[in-house]
Image (cartoon, rainbow, N blue to C red):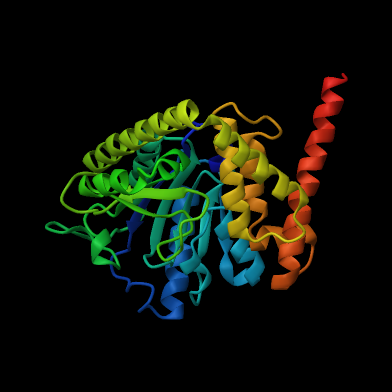
Length: 351
């Protein structure tokens, strides 16, 4: 399992994971979308060599996307190591990551480098400190594109300046059920933290999962951006916890009923879409977080969160799947997983 889905980070009752990203480009090279195939090869080789040469960077592995088929590329996207844009590019591109898949660099995506740190729970300051140190070290081996007035130059003007984007993935069922979600997220946006669906900018809201991220990369220092995002996210967390307390006080039976119905469908369904799984598992997740449900754990749901996705599902089945086959295979996977865990729990209880 990737570290960001371990479920054991700070404030893990609301926060699934934290992601910190820095966009960097190399001077004397055109942006990837304008660069020739030869120039992209140069950037990939320079970046890979710089990371492997950095003292204290640990053991890094370079993965060239040109050597992977489409399903292998999608698998890395689902693992959080790559972006969707990286799969649609041309020429030499890929990722360089550490052995734990916690810190990595995407090469020749929109920018030449996207340095990324990703882990479970709310860890904004911790991950920023780690990525800042890596950026300083890599920067001694590479010539970054930098302007004294603008800051770091990036493909998108919105990312120029610091090149920093911090994102926190949160589960907000309490706010959704108490109809407090819109005002809380609107207030967050007024304080510089934007909200997107967990699955991307143009996706519908699924499973009460959201991504909170800083809205601008310019006008403040990196530390100020991190501190502001951390403060806003902590306020959202408190609102979510208070909403859950209100539900437990006023609608405990209704919530328990919703949890039991969701569990029943997941255990009996013959067909299951990704959206259906996330919407149903959202009820189980809040049940676990509120000590109302114990038939599975957050670690179980986090593991399934990954394996119900198309590339992981096809890998589990060992073959390519049609859309119709995906629904049947996904339902079978979920039920097989829950049944196996129940059997293991029974064996443990019997010594």
